Amino acid sequence: MLEVCAYNIQSCRIAKQAGAKRIELCADPAAGGVTPSYGTIQYVLEQISIPAYIMLRPRGGNFVYDADELAIMYRDIHILKELGCPGIATGVLLPDGRIDTQQMKRITELAYPMGVTCHKAFDRTPDAAQALEDVIATGCERILTSGLMPNAMEGANILHSLVQQAAGRIVIMPGGGVRSTNIAQLRQITGAAEYHSSGITNTDYLYIASAAEIKAMAQNTL
Image: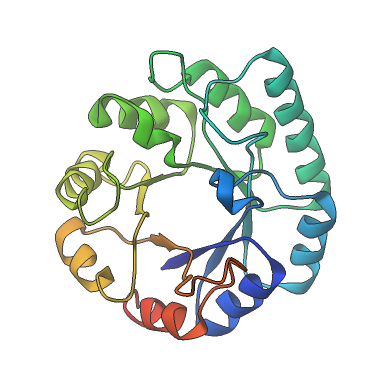
């Protein structure tokens, strides 16, 4: 199945109509995605019928958060649950780059019954195999990753290894440079069942997804 990273309501509508099965809703694409406004979240939940996982990230930059930032994230979780969100995408690392299993476990417990995706903070970790086991221990249901490489094609062999190592205990979702031109090859190499892409093909800085691109990718994940 295909998840679309959407930075606006227009992309959410396009994603649904073009065949995506889930949205990752973010703000501030220049920062790599942060938590969107509550108004945006509520409107998307009201208007879009496919599940929307909300980016839980208080700022751009690294994924090492201090006590104040974590407190803000906890409050965001509470509000997202009240809004009826089905899930969140987040990631917290230790200063040495490893998964902060204590904080991630707390987040999954606070988020329940929302689902939790460990996002591409995973790709900042030094050891993919160990990070996979660490994330599984936190209770996340999925990992969004490009295999610790700049894009999923470059990390395809590592992604395959992660899928094999996960052995159904958690979903490995390739993301990063996933396009209609390579998704079939990624499926063949990685064996993954879920894929993640923004579906953005233009360069006008409006960050609106292409319906044709999403439709082509969605057809390749059937």
